[in-house]
Length: 395
Figure 1 (tube, rainbow, N blue to C red):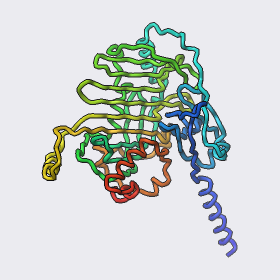
Figure 2: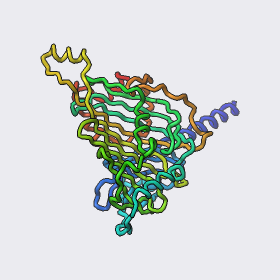
Figure 3: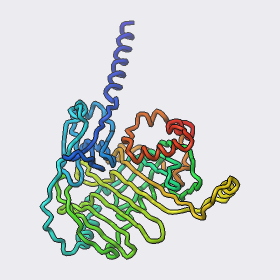
Figure 4: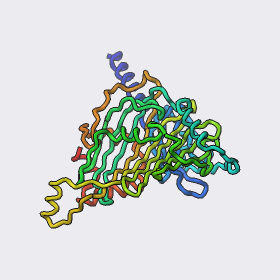
């Protein structure tokens, strides 16, 4: 009897201690400069364990750790600033959750690059060396807002696991693991043939290959990143499409890429990709934002409904898609990859995965930004339904 009781107590103690040991602890705050202005898209995390996130447009961040990481070092780095390091436990216990980064002055103002295209070509040539080019798993939070007539009418959020091989190659496979979406208030239910993760991959100039000779390149500025001076190059082609690259002065690492296409007639596109370092200094995708603006014809059934109700019908209906991607975890060891099958390719709205409220309550969702709040407010105002209620009944 005593043996059974003692065994029960021991097992219970081990079970409870294991729960305590792996309990998630939230690390949240904001990144600002010395003038208290927010620092967007800063890399925040524990470098040696590939745990962390990217700060939002407003400089806020949030991610989860366990007690295993309390004595580790929290590292915060951003283009144009000195990297800051602080003990995780010390930061969590601080009342002031603002992290102030000091601006990093560069000595490159007088550097004249005689042939910018050669510098860009060298950076592209070293892409495979400077990035994680072997298979690695990325856990991704992918968001899409569907906007019609400048008002958000649909919102989707996918948690995705993907096997990537870096910007020099392609995403090998990906799987949609968890989903939540709003009620669908769209008039134009535009559907694509592939998941937007694929379009995000294909629209990245680094992945599809930059035809550098098609662009007129010039150096437009200087900055820094994690102790290295950075040169900023911009290329403009005949159609006025712009590519801006933030390239390490000595390493030729591409830390950030911006792409904008704004033709006189046609579809506007604006994208940005941000890369951060692993413990070995190799770069991998950290954050992406992309906006596509265009127009679509209304479906015939919608036209008839609008006409019968006395509404004016336009030939083309203005639509846009706002995308945002956060990499929430990097796994480099193949033995630790999760097992999953490659997803069937279809529009983001057509995936059917049961809504897991527990997952979303315990997932390290990024802080609500102004863009997020504004879009959700527009959604909720259409019929007065709170977003949590929409999540509950629309999935």
